[in-house]
Length: 301
Image (cartoon, rainbow, N blue to C red; front, side, top):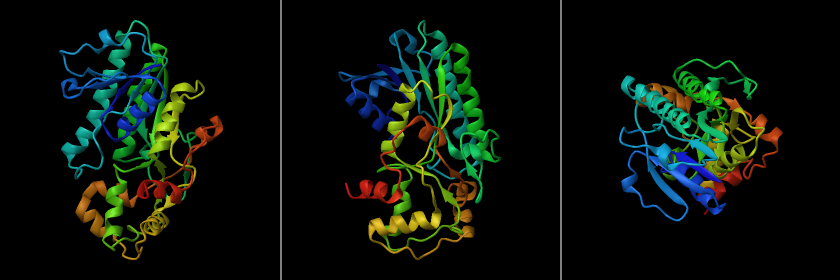
């Protein structure tokens, strides 16, 4: 298959590209700076989102698009300017994909668009699945709602569209290395009350679910990319400490987290219990359904 990937140079994008190449696919990485990368036999870097680039001229017979582009949530304090940038980066990338789809003579069969479990808002008690159709409140829920609203327009062009709602992605990059730092210096413990849910997923299953969404024609609309067994923060931390052979004993109080991070503290202090109902129903076989083996794979490689 011929598959275009945006955000292909990021954490998830790099792992996905490696996987797709190993599976024998041709990958076209859409980037603002194609000159910074060198094409290989199965990977071609194509310029986009700048007036001088015409990616549609290089993407004949495209089978699928995976849109992973968007500014990281974890790269700095959420000022009002930063919030605008987080939203606008996702909207601009998705609108760029829609423009590309409209220009292609032959439309791709599927668009897999990144999304997030932030859609559901926060709750200590409620269990969320794809059957939950009313978004939560707050900044992240608004970002995801607007993001998915833009992506849904691909369906008007006859393109099957999937919104892959990521939980916390566990791997050698991303949030996990930062979460592990307190444990490595013997200062790990619960964050806030420790009762908040953390819906997580191993990077291998992120890649697996993207591949699954591309090939499984049943997959349409929201698809939760989370492991079947989420954990409360206190239990996640204890498991992380066990895997690192470090104590789980020093709590980080909510007021300190809020003071340090401001609105960004919601990533640590709030959460949601999300179940991948559709992935399970479609028959996706999770490589890491349980937390401890997932963490062992990452830290004991």
